Structures are given as C-alpha cells and as structure tokens.
Length: 314
Image (cartoon, rainbow, N blue to C red):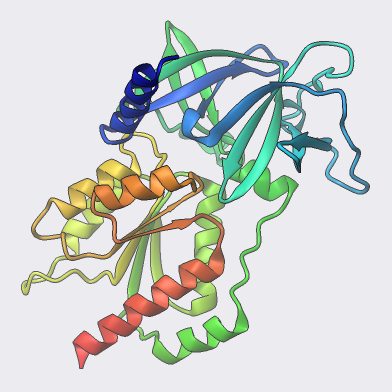
C-alpha cells in the first residue's frame, strides 16, 4: 500500500465514524455462523501461535496467554464461551483477533476471518424478546441475505476476566459532599453489561440516574427535559459509541448542533479507547472522553459537573 493509499484508507474510516456507519470484520466461529466486530477494536489478526502458556485457575475459555509484541495477552475462545465446540487450535489452522477494549488488549480465538463489511448503524437491528435478555447477542445485521451477529463483548469480558466497578473511597466521600437530589445523570448504552456497570458506579455515588439502550430514546428524553427557562433537568450525559440505529458520535453531534441542547455536558464513554476515537469525539463536540470501566474516571467527571451545577444554583 502506498502512502497516498494509506492516507485515503485512514480518511475513509474516519469519515465512516462521522456518518453513522461502521466497518466490521466478519468472522466464523465453530458453528459456521457469521459474526461481526468493529474494525476500530482490532489491532491485528494472527494465525494462532503454537506457543500458548497455560494460566492456572483461569476461566475455562481462556486457553492461556500468547505473546503479542513482547507482552502476554489472554487467548479467549469466544465460541466455547457461547457453548460451542472449542476451536481445535492444536491440530487445525485458526486465528486470533487481537483487540483493544477499554485500555486492555485481549486475543479472541476464532475459526477464521471472513470479509470486511460496511453498514449504516440504522441497518443494525437490536434484538428484542426474553430469549435475548440474558444472551450475549447485542445486534444483528444482514449482508447478501446472511445474518451477521454482533456480540456484547463487554459482557463476555466481564464474565471471563471481570471488570472493576468500585470507586475509590476518597471519591465516594467527595461525591457524598456535593451530590444533591436535584442532580440527574442520563446514560445511553446498548450493552446490558455496560448498563449494569454504569448503574453500579452511579449508585455508589448516590446520584439519581436514567439509563437507556438507544440514542433516539436519549434524544427524546433530553428534548423533554428542557424547562420554560430553556434548561435541561439533566446534569450531564454519558454515551457509548457503538449502538444500533444511531451511534454515539451521531448522537453527540445532534445534541451539540441543537441550540436547545448544546449546553448539556456530553462525555463519550466507550471501550473504543484508542487516541483516534478520543480525537473524533472532541471533533464532533463531545466535552470529554473516558474509556469504559474506569470507575474513578467516571466518578471524577460526575463530581466536577455536579460541583459546577451547584455553583450555578447558588
């Protein structure tokens, strides 16, 4: 690839992020169904290495650790976690998707990668019904008539490696001093695991909050929150990036381009924690960007905004 081609590819992907579109890598697990993963999460695709170090007392779907650029990372069999036959990586060719999630790097063992597919987020469907409530399926889309399933990888990681949701004692004490009953946080995230963790953090702070799973719902709530003086009843908003129907970048841009909503503080809270996404967040008007599952970072932002709100109320 020439330098001009490289720059063109970078621009193309940046423009996707700004236009409510996503480029995903499709891949197969052992059930031969198609799955999809946002390419922004993928650092590299490797053929499964022979050198895998076992980790004593680890989750059974963690096959061990592999070396990635001089650092050990977990090798997780996604299909086995979902109840499928494990990938036979010892006797057959298989692959590892090396991905970044909230400042951590994980290796996902898959049967084989397939092709890149570009989709608008409004083509990505959120499944409904009791059967999906406890599942790891977060969205479905279609390519050439075939379904592509998108997994709630945050739930997978929470179940397998665990995610810390405890706020430091110092921040809890600071929050107790400044949080008042009139403060209200709005959060939007389609991941059931992420919603649970956001609620756990905000509960520790004792602050009132509403969590919804779609950006259009959040926009509707924000519009309804504006009083006669033109002020919102929400102290601030947290939003994920990857969501069916409307992504977090589009949601943030719509908030900031609406004169009635533009003054609302919006923090993007995403597992797409690399620097390029942080830069995009600020380009479209987000007030802050924090990696998911960093509870102290979330608490600090809440305290800062609550303190500013308190000053305005004096």
